[in-house]
Length: 144
Image 1 (spheres, rainbow, N blue to C red):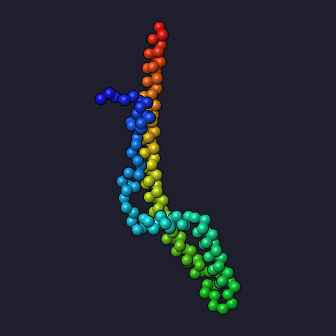
Image 2: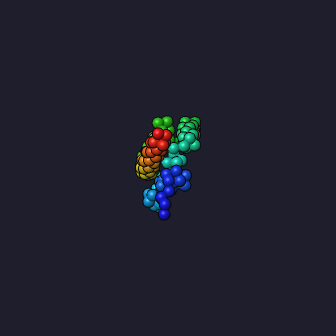
Image 3: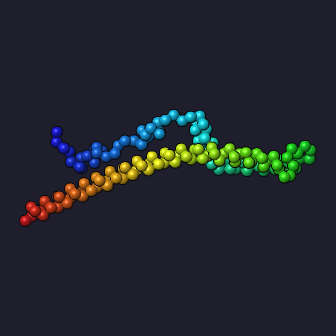
């Protein structure tokens, strides 16, 4: 069988990297319930909706406790509110970090794939330039 030219391989997509990045084993593995929940929490906790909702909750908490005439469950220094905020931060930070670590692992794989594609493209371009140089030499030789 005759070997096809560089242009044919480029036009038909053969000879190029064609492995899809989503076929990497890290993308195929099934996520655990903890990983899924970490993604969900970090997706929500890193949104403007969470920030505005949490600010509304804080404002409501303070307003109810400051203006309550009877049975204010958390008077002015808001010690209970501080405890709740500390617990939220203590739980939320590691969950978000777990999600970010998994995303960083995926980003490293993407970067390796991009590097491989760039190296392949560089080799293809070098081969094309060699072919163009050969054509130039042949044309110069045929003019003489």
